[in-house]
Length: 457
Image (tube, rainbow, N blue to C red; front, side, top):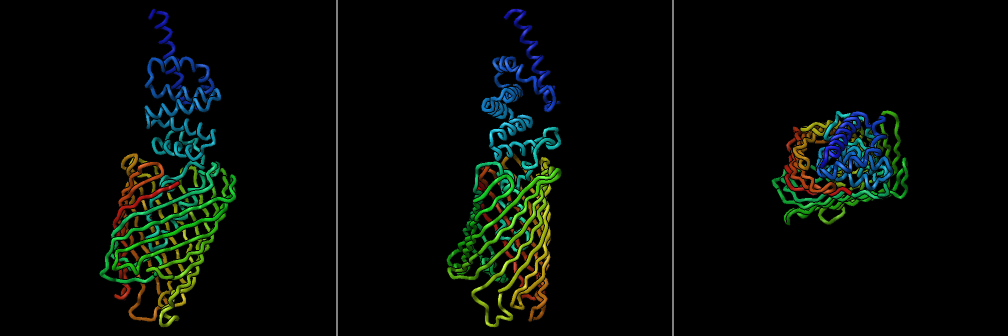
């Protein structure tokens, strides 16, 4: 190579470096407009350094500036292959995907910017619809086994948040499926019986928890359609009478809108549930749930909810006035999730609810309050650790026996979650529930440990 040629390449490299620095500091300024003009220089540099990630990123932005979205997609994809932690490349790729109408994929790359560099200038420009805590996008909460108000709060957080990124996509349905095997030290304590037994029973269980929604009507702000859910648990032979099958169908309506400071997601849904225990009908429920979700620009999320349901159980006991479980239960609560975005703390949530169980049987009517919280700790890009805990108190103000069956409820849990794919995770789960009461007949606890797999589509 002669002196003029070497000089030309040196000048080109200096121009590229200067352009890269200028674009990094002024992505929204005039420097961005110069990229299409220096595209030949960038491509000449790639011929000499084909594995330079930043040059591939600039080539992607230059092609996007020329209207070549597919070419930009390929170049930015190559930049991330070479440097997966390049926040700028994730940011640029997200904008290209959004322009191509692939908003759910764009949301993923916007969130990667928040994970990699939450305080950078790119993070400040991310739209509110993409600022969702990772826990709400890929949940693995084991919620159905909880026996306090956190089950309602967690479900509503997931539903309020998960609908927002999909509003501009063609996908009309959403699917959540959780299944696994667990060891249960008290299979008599099920989520539907409201009974507490301190038995010496213990059993391995297999369970499945499907959840499907379909949007019959779907535009930028309004959505409605049917939903189908269920929970199924099978115990070892001696405890087959506690095999649980819960079928739920219903309809939901949802409205979302953006203000300058927050995205609102308002939701109302009705559900009918048929519960079977040990192969026989156990009871049915009619449920109405109203919620208001607020998604903040920081990525935090607040959910306020109200739920009321009427339960009608097949067996009202020897004396229904004392033993019946039929009646209304009303819950109102609030939970708040903060997307921390730190290396060892991804998100923190805290919530509280008040529950009034106006049950016909005096021994089962209560007023209760609960507090709960959880935290997600990322260990690697695929492995995370989730801690949760809760406390509650129930006042059985009409209890006919002695001593009082008023109880304090404690809950603790831990989960190690491995993301096999973006939509599929496997978790090792450990949970403990304890019910403390002065009345020994109503003291109980339960340990759960198992392996859970979760699919979110």
